[in-house]
Image 1 (cartoon, one colour):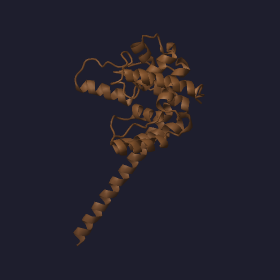
Image 2 (cartoon, helix red, strand yellow):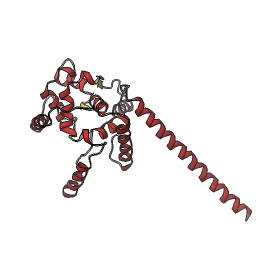
Image 3 (cartoon, helix red, strand yellow):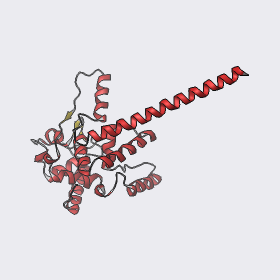
Image 4 (cartoon, rainbow, N blue to C red):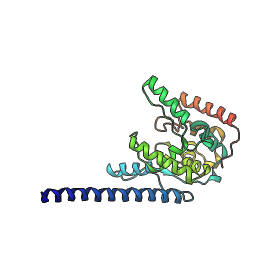
Length: 242
């Protein structure tokens, strides 16, 4: 009787110890994530999770060189129409939401019921959270962590910073990350500052799927999307990103 009681007590103690360790691990992870996001309010990210995933894949495949082009440029070095182009293309309610566009999410769910496929409804903030901190995938766990980082970004960064980081880590072509590398490698520009309004619209047009849509040899779909973005830019006019 005493032996059985002792075993149950030990088992309960083990579970308590496990829960304590798990609790402290969660608290540490939350504290680290808050510190990381806070530090990146001002510091240029040296890399992103998606770039690191590409480096890891190259290492696993024993490739000697990883063809990644990434050149950080600050807010003032990017023309205003480039910011306007990505907002027009990807998230026209960007300035008015707190990281989630519930109307677009509802619309995407409705279309999934009709077509059986979920259309993307991610905001720019969600894309920054995904590209900067997370791994590729569509699991509920990853979506939950993405939502957590989205809230952190909206709380700790201003809209200008979110856009600035987005345009520096977004992939515009195979291994081409950031608007400056895209301007140089895909459009032959000296820097992002030399992009025209049409250039900006063309770069924004490939963002949904830069591995399929090409800047150098745009398909008829990309050309039409580019023209649509230019019309949306005209309708949006001058947007103050504060």
